[in-house]
Image (cartoon, rainbow, N blue to C red; front, side, top):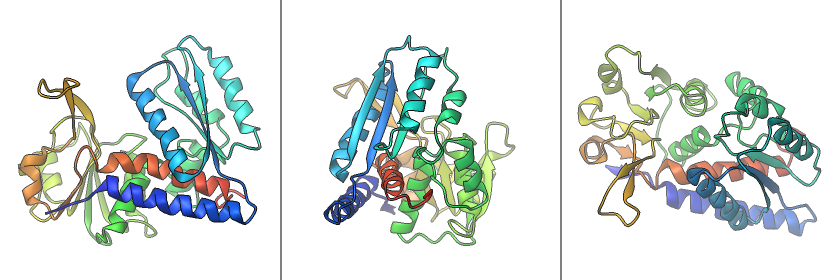
Length: 292
């Protein structure tokens, strides 16, 4: 069993990005600029956005954080999106989700200029991804692909089973893994209504768990020698930890790890790659690589 070290991989990629940015600047180009819009004071969102700002610093990017209180109106937030769409110095931006209930997340996502949509959530980017055109790919699926590639894990012709069908992970992961350009695999997507889900999972050469249910994947669901990618990060109570909780993945790591050829830990697996891939998308936006 080999651990897939997302933390070390992300650090290496950020170093590569920083070196490229310095070459761009030395040649007279501009530093990529990422803006983030944060609404309210959700603890998870605060941490995630803070980590994005730190990642921008590590990559040599300019970064801007725009904050609003929970009572911001949808109209005010849409006006902010419009300003960022037309801000020449901002190459890409994200509106951190979730948003307060009185604001339509989909309306906000669709208002973002798809050429600055470094989260890869805009329907144009999602559609282009589905048919294999250049686009911004959402960060978590992109990060998983990068890990598979950097660990030289063969995907062509392998059976890939994805647990979960979310718009952010499950669906785009399935699209990418079946495409010749990326996974070139045979893909099965399982979800809460799938019959005999354990049987489907046991047939996987590559099992990607993205259901948001702690320790959902147990040893009897994993074929010996399988590659297991754990996307889940749920806080579970743990009195032995200073903060009173620990992060638990969708995979029962202690049970499953001995069976695997490769497995991602939680934390330190897919998580660090997500922000790192946002940096890669921002670099591409700054270089106008995708949408000139």
